[in-house]
Length: 244
Image (cartoon, rainbow, N blue to C red):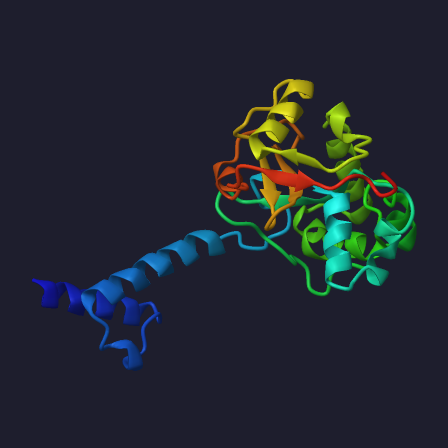
């Protein structure tokens, strides 16, 4: 029976052009994994990287002091001067990312339409690095299905829909926090935001980002896959604002 199934799967994959002669020696388990992978790829390929074809957004808010400390440790502080050299930023917008329920599109137009420099400069109050803004348009904005100006207007609307907890606006000393407590603080000041719609990310020791899932009309919504990628540390450090 196993040999019959193996032969049938082999013929099926060959008919689809998914299995070549060099892979005929795979066992049933290997062939079954190939079938599963092919089915998964097929399911996603139906709209993979098609502009405007996605399920929801992730608004990613980066804790700027962590970014700047990490840049200094890597010796990249000079390249991060726009964000790390002057104004003491707290949470800044990393991006607004179109998502599938499983996975996400990126670089949906190659080459991407050129981003007008005036649009870039208009976003520096929320995204304080020109390179970040250009990159976010190329990688994520082109997947939104929106023209550039409308995409960045959507970022601004999404950011204005989220209130930052007051204790993080002018943090003058390093603060050790539990990721769950940060989520709770955001939920307290944002009615309708649930713990299934927010995820805190971290690196080895610092809080990196707060990611909030939003529908296409910018309402909070659950996102299991994003939540599963959240920081699992019991505690992380939030470095203070620069000059703090």
